[in-house]
Length: 453
Image (cartoon, rainbow, N blue to C red):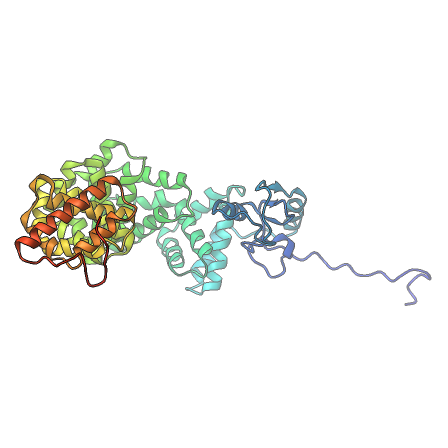
């Protein structure tokens, strides 16, 4: 105390600024973190309520239809986002006091050394994801570092993408894979020296990139451009051999605006396409196989319908209608409609009349409106159009609760064309039941009673 001048307070030692680790350090000032993502804000913006968020996070909140402030729950008079320049400046000043961030190569070494430990792997992935942000301008350096050792970095990123700690972190891993996706394509179209494991790894990585919601459309288009630039025949063979994962990539190519009509036609005309898709559908109950068939039919029309039927798609699609998730079942119903538009398809449906009728009727009221209308269309095309098929009418008349379910569709919110087709089906069923002595005294069924018009 004797060193203190009289009348003055002793000097207090000012503690050094706490370090700002941009990923997720516990010492990061809370004001620098976005209330939604809990990550340090890269572009802070404020809502009319005064709360500040990272632009990307609050934009996703607003784009999903919310019109309230996430922090205060107050309704928003406006969705205008005002840049919080002061806070952004403070974050940048604080970040300037940090030691240099590790290079992409060092971060990838940390990821490889994590040996599946979730916390360490997530830290490395989030660090790399921060570097590929547009405002960072380091995407090329990250891509170069990953591409330098694809055989080790891609499996590590894939492993984390499948089982990482959080959804956003898994999306980050896929976004990193997207930076080297064109390089991964070489594993599919190389000179044949790659081992089967490398091809499988490449297909999994490409499927993850093309099916992820967090990857930009520009990145996906660039990847598809690289895929169709090589030997299309070899590409199709390789993807089909990879099973359901490869079909995801193939379907993305067929539905993308990037390939021209000639490239899509060349893919849809491959002789092995529909037989392999049917095989994959039977073996793995793959919804992607159904979507890929639908895309090929959309590209080639009648020739593709005939190829699909000759490959034995009708029984496989009937099984999918009966057992697949709702979205896949609706797609399968739409493909059965396409099959029923050609004579070969109508004959194939009649050959499996009992299975098709049971599957379609069993699922008719357990799908959405599009699925219900497709179900009615399949039955009408095979039972009534052009005279129909007797075997199919007999199978429909024998299906449990057929009359009641058709009445449910007619009295629901269906199109006039669907209502007309359902009415014709009811008359066909009634006539078939009378012919076989199966008519009941009313439209009763075990679980449904709907009064007819």
